[in-house]
Length: 443
Image 1 (cartoon, rainbow, N blue to C red):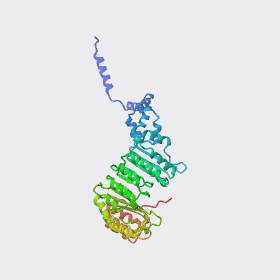
Image 2: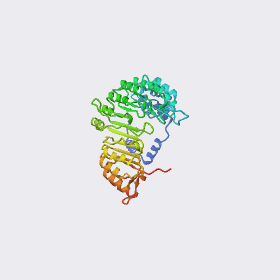
Image 3: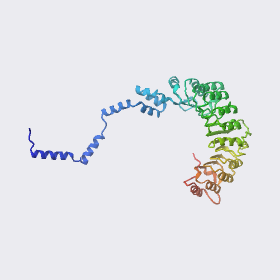
Image 4: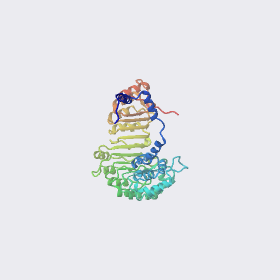
C-alpha cells in the first residue's frame, strides 16, 4: 500500500483548484475560434445523410412550396424523394397551364407530365383549374384533358381564359361533352367557375343531377347558351348554394323567389354583370322590389354586387325603386341622375366605385349618398369632378366608417373654402388617419 505524503496531497489540491477555476478570456476566444471553424468532411457527410433520411411528411411539406418543374427535378434525387413525389396528398391541387409558344410568353405544362398525371393521379385530383391563352388549340387541349378525367373526385373546377375567351371558339357540342364527363363522374363538385364558355342548359341539368347536394359556388358570367330556365334549375335543386355569379339577362323575379324559398340555405353572395348583350341595346328588364325584398328577408346578410359596363343611355331601368345592392362598380361613365338614384334607393350600399362621370360636379349626389347610405365604408372616384368643400362635407358625414377612400387628385376642384393643400388635413381629421388623394401616375 502506497503512502501519500502531506506535501504531495497539498500539491494535488492546488492542482485541482487551478483546474476548476473559470477559463480566461483568451481561452474562451480560442474555444470560440475552434468551434466556429470550417466543418469537417465527416460533418458534411452526416448532413447529406440527414437530407436523404428526412421524414416523408417533411419532404412532402417542402415539395408543396416548389414550382412543378423544380418538384419534378427534386424527385430524381433519390428513391425516397421520388416516392413522395407520387404521394396522393401532393396531387390534390393542380393547375393545368395550356399556352401556345407562338401566341403566349407563358410556359405551358409539359404534355408528358399531363399524361403522367392523368395515368397515375387522376383519382387524386380534387382542386383543378385550367388556364388557357387566346388560342383555340389551348382550349381544345383543355377539353381533351377533361374528357379523360373519368376516375376523378373533383371538388373545385375552374376554366379560366387568361386572354381573349378561347373556350368560346370551340363547338358547343365538343365543350359540353368534355365538361359533362366531370359533372357525371365527380359527384362532389362544390365550386365551379365556367365564365366565358359555351356551357348550356342540358349540361347544367347534368351538373345538378349529380352534384346538387354539394354545389356551393357557381360562377358563369358571359355564357350565351344558358337561359334563365337553366339557371332557375340550379337554384331550384342546389339547396346548399352559397354564391352565384351570372349576367343580368339571367336574373329574374322567378330566380330571386327560388333563392328565397324555405328549402334553400341562406345565399351569401350574388354577383351580377350588367353588360350590353347586343350592340345598340338600350332596354334592360326590371326586377320587382318585392322580389328583392323576398331575397333579403330570407338571406339578411347577402351581399349583392353589381358590375356595370353600360353607356349612359342604357341605365334607365336601374335603381328606380329601392334595391338592396351592397357593392356597385361603374366601369364606364355614369350620369348624375343615376348617382342621384343610388343615394335615394340603395340604403344597403357598402362600396361605390365610379370610373368616370364627365364634367358635371357631383356635389349634391355625393352628399346624398353619405346621408342616406349609412353602411357606406368604401368609395372610389376616377374621372369625375367634386368641389373640395362638398368632398370634405361628404367625409365629415361618413366619418371613420370610411375605411377605404381612393380619390384621384384631378377629381377635387379647389373652391373659396379649401384648396388641394388644405383638403389633406381636413379629410385626415375626420377619417382619424393620414389621408392623401391618389396621384395620376406619369411615365
